Amino acid sequence: MSASLVIGASGGIGGALARALAARGPLTALSRRDDGLDVTDEASVARLLGALDGPYDLVICATGALGTPEKALRALEPDAFLDQMRVNALGPLLVLKHALRLMPRDRVARFGALSARVGSIGDNRLGGWYSYRAAKAALNQGLRSAAVEVARTHPQAVIAALHPGTVDTGFTAGFAADKHDPDRAAADLLRVLDGLGPAQSGCFRDWRGDEIAW
Image (tube, rainbow, N blue to C red; front, side, top):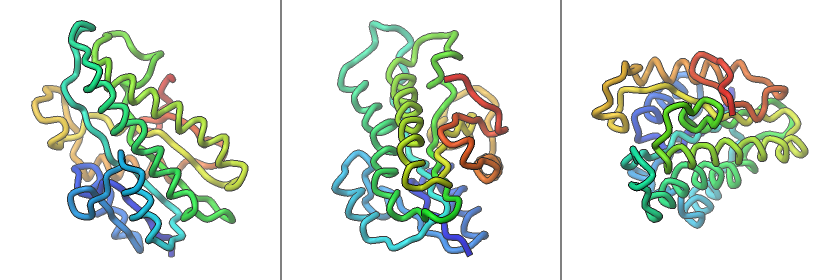
């Protein structure tokens, strides 16, 4: 029976993913709130993931932060920008760095990280949201690069950037857009991730499985 690892399991989407995966088989669920896992602190990531044995056929990093989206360039603040980079780009890549040893080399193993459509450069028609957009774009590039490298040691690995849509969690409080139920969003994300094979490693997909422009 395959085992799964969820990072960010105390969040809205992470919690829903953990619930769904617990019904499938063995699950390890870690979060900052419950376990002190700070994805921006490599020592924290190394300590907690270093204590695990694996193997995990599925690893999902469901961490992230929005901050205060900038509506104009004049609102851009260096510290806020760097905070977004640490949480949304660096954090998931550090998780992948330390989770890779837990992923099997002799069969399909999947790693998914929550990205966002606003991280698409090709799909950016509204502007604004400088820090969050840049951080998610950086995450996408990092995952794409990692997919190339990881394929050399884990030829059946799948690395994917996943856009969950606007999900009804504390993360999106105040958003007027139609929102997805967290459990439905988790089911959609798992369906998409399950359907990806090594040939699609390094992709950027939404909850429907559609490709998103880089």
